[in-house]
Amino acid sequence: MLIKAKEKITKNYDVIVIGSGLGGMTLANKMAKDGRKVLLLEAHNKLGGFATWFYREKKKHVFDISLHGFPFGMKKTCRKYWNKEIADHIVQIKKVKFTNPQYTIESEFTQEDFTTKLVNHFQIPLETVNAFYDYIQGMNFYDDQSMTNRELFQKFFPDRNDVVRFLMEPIVYANGSTLDDPAITYGIVFSNFMKKGVWTFKGGTDVIIKMMREELLNNNVDIKMHAKVEKIIVKDGKACGVAFKDQEVFAKAIVSNGNLHNTIFKMVGSEHFSADYIEKAKKVRMNSSSCQVYIGLKTGETIPFIGDLVFTSTHPSFDTDALMDLNITSRTFSVYYPEGRPYDEIPRCAIVSSTNAHYDDWNNLSDEDYQAEKEKMIKETIDSLENYLPNIREQIDFIDAATPRTVERYTHHYKGSSFGTKFEGLEISTKMHEELPGLYHAGSVGIIMSGWLGAANYGVIQSNNIESYLLDMEKQNSNQNINVEREAHVQL
Image 1 (cartoon, one colour):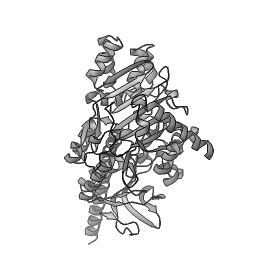
Image 2: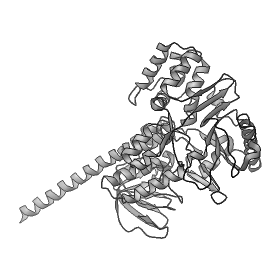
Image 3: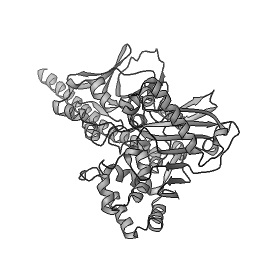
Image 4: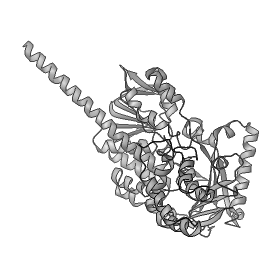
């Protein structure tokens, strides 16, 4: 049921989930379907976390924040852990375009198509391409993590910056990874996409999140919004509840779908963890953030098909530092055509330009300089888009921009991170319950857990861990009750 903002919660739960990103929602839904009593708490007025959207001018315009594309695996995850209707709304995008000083290529973003491009355009021997695929598809979490992305590409495509750009640039936009991150952060994500291309949700983020909310309610998940958790309650060395506003609610297990740093240092407190764990947690780096420019076209205006995703850059070579520079040279256009939102009364055309960014570059600006940089970013975005749509300037009805400061404000992500933490955050996240029994984390960590598919699947992984914890707890309680009964019988 939906719990009203002023309504007090009077019952206890098996699981309380803090935050309704895709990881938190998927975890809540799975555990509810498994028969657990679940409470989902969200600080904002809608579910979804970074998988969100916003309307402008009385819903004349709608913009998706992060619905750019995900692997086919998202369809399977939704079918198994949500429902068939949600899975059936996931459709394959038609075309990805790459335009930069090194090449101009259109691709279906499948392994077969990439193989053709690598062999015919880049003149890479087929055996080398297949060896590369075999290598990255064999990667797993338990491998030696010392190899970096830079070393991986040098191993198979030595000194071929153009090939590296073709293979890695889309993944950088997908999860913020760099050439110096562990190779697994690239390999697993790229392998997922290569299986069956890039997919998206027909109808938009607002449709999918509303469908997910209905599924949660159908499975008896209690949902309370406008409920920003201030404290995770710890008693007798276990996480057992949460405090928000003027009330406390208790449960057998607590799950944070929030930022790793906020979870440990704000909601719990370092005193509840070992000194070694806290030192490692302090060293976990945030991943990069992002900027976006939202463009809504006038009613009735249409545009020709230029691709669903357009990776464009004026930088002479591939450079992950340049991809995040305040002076933007590279951006990705996500183009939303009317057929992508078939449920709207008025056909909509929208374009979202995305660029990776450093939080400090934007946060350290004065208010005056900040506004000037936003206006500069908007102007340069339109200039770039005119290369594909020459008349776009006259077609625009609405335009606005977001920066890492915007991400921090609306998502409460530490330092405005769009992609969670760097890879070292995964160990801290997965071992949280070992440090503090009853407390689990399902937020975006380790790069490979970012994005729609990674977030949802991490929720599933953690739900299985929590279920094992609850079963052990119930078994211990059952054994204690049996012992008490035995002792009482002996006394009689």
